[in-house]
Image (cartoon, rainbow, N blue to C red; front, side, top):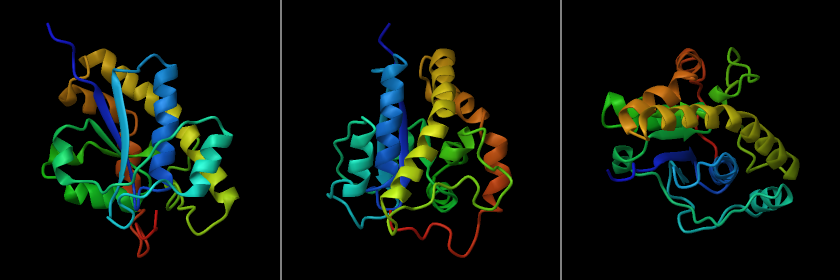
Amino acid sequence: MRDPSPYRVCFVCTGNICRSPMAESVFRAHAVEAGLDGLVEVDSAGTGPWHEGDGADRRAIDVLTAHDYEQDHIARQFRVEWFDHLDLVIALDSGHLHELRALAPTPHDAAKVRLLRSYDPDADHDALGGLDVPDPYFGGLDDFEECLEMIEAASGGLLDAVARAVDASGTGAEKGVENAGKAAESATAENASAADGPDAGKEST
């Protein structure tokens, strides 16, 4: 019997230079620490092409380095054809969630898209935008630190869900999406429409 293919997770923000590369670095470190290296593949992308080919924002790099996270990043845009080989697509805010689900070619692919903070039990699931990771791009270093804190707070729950999916399915995509999304399903559904505002998804990163 051949080895199962890795379980693939892609984090998505707007420009792929701040939030999503930070989430990628943090989650990869958690996965390695949990012994899932080789069983889980982690990457990131942006909903738009504005920073394709660029490295991560200098402030994101500084914050990650200060917290001992490694990163080696080149920005790229998310492509619709990636849905076919991804198991989870993790949106950093509700604007990305709606944009990615609209882009998904099938309902099964749309179900792969989840909000990162829906995996954080302490996030405010009832507040408008309560599951968003705010864009730090127009802020200062403190905003990037706050962004990292939110990512770290959600990464444990996401890791637990992914680990259960890997154990239950041998990293099979069909069952894996069901298991990894179950913990966040109701929160995401309940907050998706509430998070639709005129400024949803307008961040630069």
